Length: 300
View (cartoon, rainbow, N blue to C red):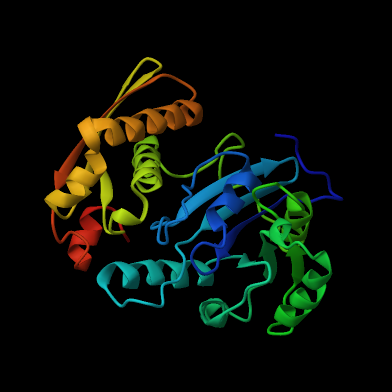
């Protein structure tokens, strides 16, 4: 890594990415760091963990923290745990990205905004701006939302198209503290390959099964072995009922085969080597009904 000059001290800090579900937080982080470490799906509650993505440039290290979408509809153990993750992350961040969808601001957005500490620099990120056909409405919309808080910056972006992401990163950098890097310059996340493998399988599960499957379904990596450059991954998809198991397996096993194939390809791209993947589907009821069950599957 090139050492910073006296005129450009090295900056490093944590940047929390928050917003209601499905505004594109995970896609935004993946595109900012240039690697897919946080899974994406149209299904709400896809992100359940505090996921860290790291990008290091010549004079700065950006440590992004993708949080679960703040849940307001149901007060079960899983949602309480997810919301606690969000609020804890906010208080420990150096910069906060408050992400909304262009042209849309509702009660759920306001509830997230109300959680953001007043003493932390907060940038309003208006995502999916490419979907607004009449660009003339973007400016008054941005002005309307910007009036709700003293934001340190307002940046319309399209994470999917990488529109204005360089401008966003420049705005973030202004507010990072002068610190040495926390991670190595080649690190892209603080999560293990085993954790990332589970997340990739879970993403494909929701992609292929969609709204048919309850959000409480999850993935457990039962064995993760490294043999030279080959990774052997043995995963279990946990569902709550036999009918859910049938949904995941599909007709003659075709759906499970598709999930396995696409998950393996994503793992090989991320890990940079061949992957042998086996997936089973198991029925395990009630794991998300209490906090002890959540901790057993890695929810903190």
